[in-house]
Length: 116
Image (tube, rainbow, N blue to C red):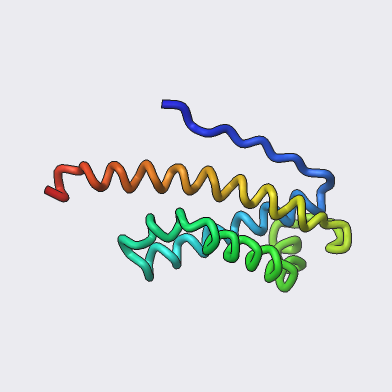
């Protein structure tokens, strides 16, 4: 089985750090989503329109605590150097990889002996 490859193109450090912060926020969102949605999680993560809205929201809301993120990891850059469109494209790639993994997990769940 071949896993999808992911190549991220990043123009500068500000964008790279923003993508890292966005990926962290995406991970936290997925954790909450799985906790609250239970088995429906795997279906909802495949919803392109729904997840596109989530990703855009993560990018839009990422500005609020970006400086705290920089301070936490001791990064130095300016928010006005971020290419937000580039960050969204890369976050979509991260989502595609995670969606693929979630699909595999749901298939394993369907055929697991415990499910019986």
